[in-house]
Length: 151
Image (cartoon, rainbow, N blue to C red):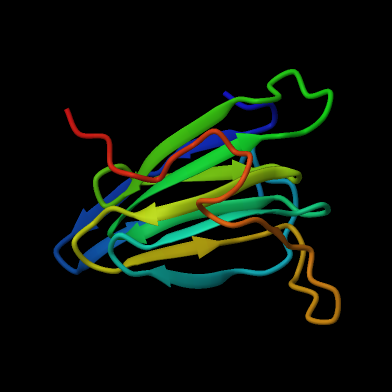
């Protein structure tokens, strides 16, 4: 596991009215702070990658559909520099993943329908000076290919 990445297995509690799933609590061991909460969606087979943040951690959960969340540690001097982590998360595996600052991350929607992703970063988005640094999802130095691995 990449240094400072944390995973919380989420529990779905169903009853005759519907379902409840807690995602992140202030008393969770992996909680570091609150900036904002937002919802983003990704259409089937679409890749949203790669980017990293210098100042914030992300807390990512897929609440509808399935995504393949991929992290890459390019941090100089990190004990896990060069490592890749892959998480298949969503309807069939509800998880929350903390993505530490300076770790590249992105995802691909692997479900047949649009995926809904909740992110709770530790800092609010700064419209004037975004803490977001991007590279192309396919043409880059990251040793990962987004194609499906059959076999």
